[in-house]
Length: 327
Image (cartoon, rainbow, N blue to C red; front, side, top):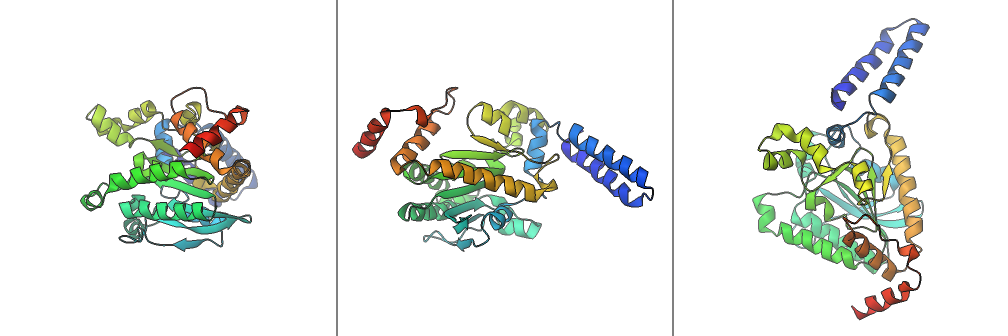
């Protein structure tokens, strides 16, 4: 039984509460529901987490932004071609701290999903993101990015307008920035489409989000020529938050309620905000040069068991500053 089937059973149990008139029966059923949540909704396979990351009711980037920064001002366009609705970007404050916020937005309805291109950005989306990041660098604003995409859009038009080059340009330019960059993976983190706004000093991840080089279905079709083996592929890909924390790809896991973030969105928003501010308060103590060096060294260390620890460098900091000036 996968997590969606368990969710259907939970909803059916909850509906029974209204039909019970006896207080003792209600109390007994609520206890059964709580027990089911703790014992069944928390036993998740990698494929369960894939299903939760894609859940239609899962909170979208705009919901996070509305909670984190109610005064958020959206900015549009890449100044080259058009505005890409699959990426939201702008300026807002989080508890008095001004951030440039960039996010990939899935739609809440089919019509909205078509408008947002199912959160699969075109090149102009990434160029809009880069424009805003360069603006943040100019005005010394920290950058917050929210990742939730199956991947960059692979259409002919996107390729004609330089999809691969746009992603590569983002990675190169983000590597040079001297302001704090914090990334939160809130749902799907697919391939270069996610990484193009995820070259960060610190990467946070919701407990049931995923981050991988491609979809489990794509992996299964390439490796086994059988898309039905996607659940098996999900296990092999090590795409869950816990796998990635063990591999030191991400820095922190933000817990979700049993059954997924959609069961208690407000708590997830609160915990995400706390994690972001805690991370920012640590990063803002570093100079721009130190942030640059920390971000690049952290990324280059992917795959090594020993995580680079800037705080323990001691006297090497002077060499870092000299190296930066020499560049």
